[in-house]
Image 1: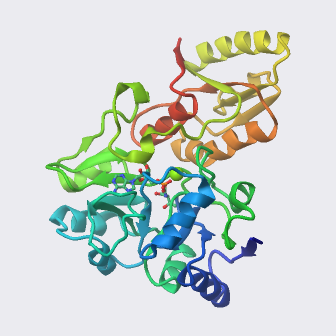
Image 2: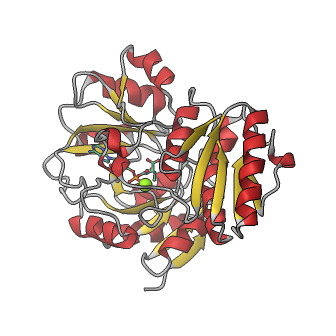
Length: 349
Ligand code: TXA
Ligand code: MG
C-alpha cells in the first residue's frame, strides 16, 4: 500500500486534509497523527477490523490493549460505564491533556480494541490537529503509539514513516510533539486510583486533586519483579539495537566512569554512543554524543529521549552509555522509559 504523507499546519489545520484523514478512519483505514505526547496510529475504535489492522501494522501482540481517543468529555460515557466521580474530577483537572483513564468498558466497544479486557483506556488529547481529526473520524479513535512494536515511540512524523511506511493509509505531519513521552495512565477500576504508567501528569499532581493514589510498584523494576497491570508495560520497549548501560551518580563520577568505559569500548573496535546532559556533554569523547538537555530540565530530556534512542540505531552505534537522571516528579516518567530501554542495566557510582 502507498502511504500518503501529508504536511498539516499545526496552528490552523487545513479542513480538507482533516476531512480526508477522518474519512480514511470511517472507511476502516489507518492514519498516524500527532498528539501532545507522541504520534498515535489511529483506527475506528468501534470497528474490530480496524483494531486488528493496527496490531498487524505495528507487529504488536494482540493482548496489548489500545487507548480510545475522544474529542469531548461527554463522549466518555459512550465507551465506559459505571464511571466513578474521580473520573470527572480528573477530566476537569487534566483533559484535554496527557492523562489516560482505565474504566469498565461498554459492551459495544469491541474486545479487539481492548486486548480482550472488560476495561477500556480513554484519553482526550490536547493537540490542535488531533482534536479535529478525532471529530472528523467519528469521535472515537483507537490509537497506540505509531511505532513498530518494540521501537521507541515516534516524536516526529519522520519517525512514523521509518516504521510504518507502506503499512498504513496516511501520516499527518503536524511537526514535533511537545512532551515526548506517552500519557500517564490511571486505573479507576480498583479500590483506589492506581498509576499504571508514569507520564507528564505526575503522582503529586494527581494527589492534589484526588487525595489518594497508588503507583503500580512494578513500574521502576525489571519485569522479573512482578507483572505490571498495564499489559503493554511488560514488553521490552524502546530498546536501541546496541547495548545500553546507565550510569548513576554525580556528574563528575558519571563523566569519569564514562570516559573509562568509552576508552575500553573504542579500543575493542566498538562504535560508541553517549546520551547525557548538557552539563557533561562538552567533555565526553564518543563517536556519537547526544545532549538531551540540562539535568534540571526534565521537559527537555523527555522531548529528546526517543529521538536520541532512534539516532543511535541510525548511526549503528553498538555500545551506548547513558546518564541516569532524577526520578522525582516528571523524572519518574523519563527514567521509566530510559530504564526499559536499558533493560534495567544501571551502574551506581
Ligand atoms: O500518550 C499516549 O498515551 C499515546 C498517544 C498516541 O495517545 N498512546 C500510547 O498508546 O502510548 P500505547 O498503545 O503505546 O500504550 C498504551 C498502554 C499500554 O501499555 C497498554 O497495555 C495500556 O496502555 N492499556 C490500554 N488499555 C488498558 C486497559 N484497559 N487496562 C490496562 N492497561 C491498558
Ligand atoms: Mg506504545
